[in-house]
Length: 147
Image (cartoon, rainbow, N blue to C red):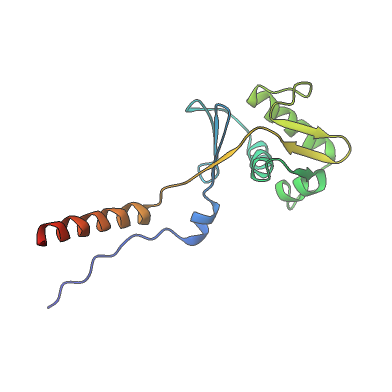
C-alpha cells in the first residue's frame, strides 16, 4: 500500500488578503491580529477605533471622506458624525497625536481625514511561503551532492 503524500497547510486566500501589516513611526498595525503596537508593546484601542485607523492607514496620503469611514466602520448602524469625531480623537490620543499637531491624522474640514505619516506595508510571511522556501533549499542542497 502506497503512503499518502504529505499535505501542506494552505492558508485560506481570504485570510492572506486580509492580513496586512503597516508600520509608521514607532507603530505597527496588524490587521488580522487586530493589534496596534508601539515599539512592540500593545496599545489599547477600541474595535471601532482600530477599524477607523486601519481604513485611514490603508489609504495613507489620500482623503477618506467622513461618509466612507462611517459606512466602513459602522456598517449596520446609524451613527452621527460626532461618533466619528470622538473615535478620531481616541486614535490621536493612542498615537500621541493631537488635532493641533496632526502628525498622523490630518483633518480636512467638513470633508474627512487623511493619514499623513510615512507608512510602509510590511510583507507577511505565510506558512506556505516558509515551507516552500525550505523545500526549495533542500532540493538545491540535494542537487549539489549529486554533482
